[in-house]
Length: 185
Image (tube, rainbow, N blue to C red; front, side):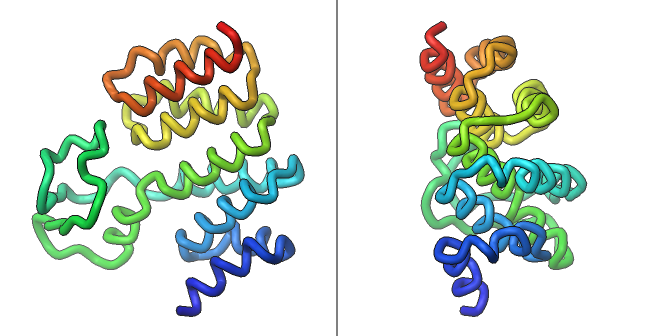
C-alpha cells in the first residue's frame, strides 16, 4: 500500500516528482512520468531525457521466453489485454521477472509526458526517432514515440513517421498516420 500512496502523491505534489523519477522501483518512475504528463511543463524535459537514458541501461528486452494463458503470443493487436497468466521456461530471479514486468512501460509513460509537453530538443528528438527505427524496440514504445513526434511537430520527424506508417502493427501505424495528419502532411 505504501507504493500506491507514493505513486498517488506525485499527482498532488509536484515537488516529489524529481526524486520519484529516479526511484529504484520502476512503478514509482512510471507514476512520476505520468505525473509529469499531467503537469505538462517544459521544465520536465531534461528529467524525462534522463529517465530514458536510465531505461536504456536496463535489460528490458532480454527476459526469458514466456507462454501466455490465452492468446496467440502475438501482441501486435492487443489480444493479450485482460488478466493473463504467464509461464516461464524456468525459475528466474526477482530482478529478471521485474524487468519482464516493466518492459517498455516506463519508456512509454515518458513518451506520453513528452507528447503532453509537445516539445523536445535535438538530442531528445534523436532518441524518439531511434525508437521508431530500432527493430528490437517494443511496439508500445514505437507507437508512443510516434504520438510524441506528432505532438512536437518537428518536420525532421517526417522520415521516422513515414517509416512507422508501414509497420505491420496497427497502433504504431495509426499513431504515425495521426502524427503526419497533425503536421498536415
